[in-house]
Image (cartoon, rainbow, N blue to C red; front, side):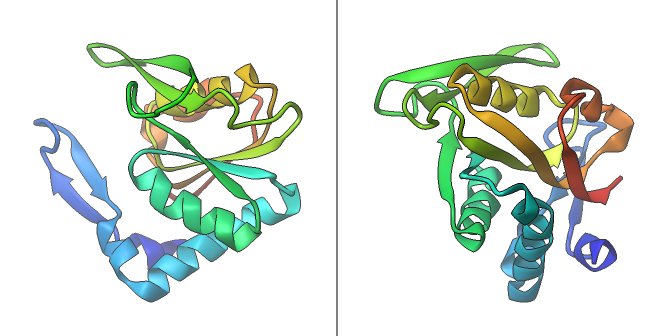
Length: 172
């Protein structure tokens, strides 16, 4: 299946800056069969782990994360950039190449002991994924897995997720 899905990933050289090859999943999402197959492949990993919630981060993590939560019959929670959520929040910082950023989550989004599957479209350096893990654990949730469509293995993002069950559909 990964070979079929990888054919729908578009490489965009020098985006967002020179030397970066952006992996664009929008062609995959635009193809109904590929979208469905991606959700099913993610669900195959997730279903035996029995999540209560799927957490996705903006923006592409919302698309597949919401579809995956629907497919699994569980809830969805949204990790957002600072200032985007209208209620009381908790936050977690992560490092960027030239600075620090953070993600926020509503303070009541995850109940103590909830089983949370974290989803994002891409695992690169692992910073944003680690921030999502921190958000879940701040609220007393249990991270039962971290799933990605794409993993850029040469950036060693799994190292920041050591001790967690990490799964990706396509590896570069």
